[in-house]
Image 1 (cartoon, rainbow, N blue to C red):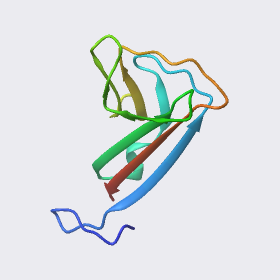
Image 2 (cartoon, rainbow, N blue to C red):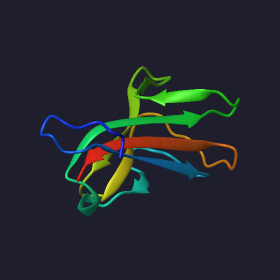
Image 3 (cartoon, one colour):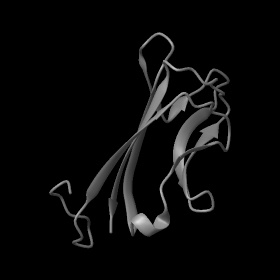
Image 4 (cartoon, rainbow, N blue to C red):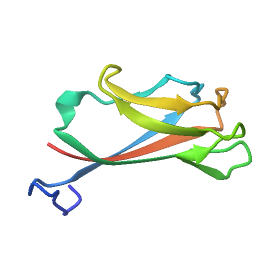
Length: 103
């Protein structure tokens, strides 16, 4: 629990996922998170460690001028990567997904 409440009065919970060595392209399932785990998602924040060790936030504007991001997909039962950029799997690269939700 975060100690905060949502507009419906329900407590807000936070979960942090760290995903390593994952290739990312449009529609890739990044992390499973079943709908049965939550009632409503309040916020999603995600970022990736770049090859130079810097942090790349999602949503961002890719090199082609189109955005890339992480979103929840009920049909995939988890978080997917959406966008025009592609990232190869590297053991030194990771994605963090921080989700806040109600039950």
